Image 1 (cartoon, rainbow, N blue to C red):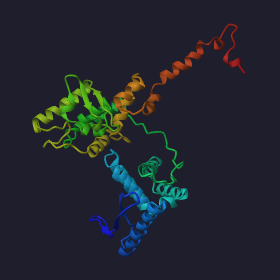
Image 2: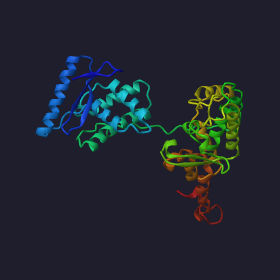
Image 3: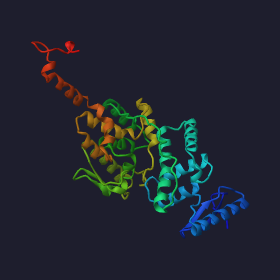
Image 4: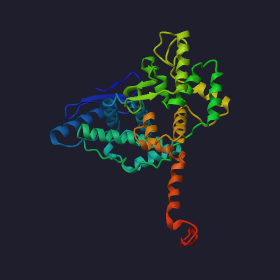
Length: 357
């Protein structure tokens, strides 16, 4: 019989499909009679599949729910739930088999009208495509995938980084934030290690090795799920020493590097960071851009891209190549080789560039 969840007025049903798997499925309606009718319809479809081999219709809701339940341990599970919410809001629940490419195009057009970027729309498309692929593989369903070929072109990734003078001004502004005594050290550590915001805010003292000058990040701490060791230069060590003094004076038993005076882990620095940027006169700069700045400085200093990749924990060097334009010397050296070619030398009997047709 249909039932309701505590957090929703929508009726849900539960039944056993042809493979013996328990299915819990939203009816998408607040009308109980309609929900009873849908339950009967779906049970009949399951019966026909079991006894007659007929492939039943699978709703968008059913496919997304199966994926979400099976992938609860994904790091991006909260993002997946948000994507599912968008699909529910903008595309009425119906069978995947009836979903056409024009429906997907309509969804894309609606999201664009809402001012959503192509990259965000692509992530939403990828989510539904992943749900369909998962069900086809896990349950041997034969669902069509109307998402194929609908990916939008995305602009080149944004790279915003600070000059050295801007960095000095930002740290000075952060030091004048009385309600955020952690901020200056947070900025220093980010600029000198390239660590992600979550990696820094989730950092525990047990993973800081000051004697060896290293921070240890296990797979569960990183975005890519891979273990990484972060070396500490003098500026990064100074930032950690500043945090150590703060903890010793206020919360000596705290496990967290970035914590408040009671020892509780800090969850966010966005507000105080934005205030410091305004005081320093720095615009269009976000917390994640500290990481961009570290990478840009390293590449500008001549550090090879593979080494920058390893420090930042990029999954591939392609992610790091967005900073390659900061090393024009490599390209300049390459075109300089043309000067060494005899046919392009000026003077004597050699042909000049101007004379070559």
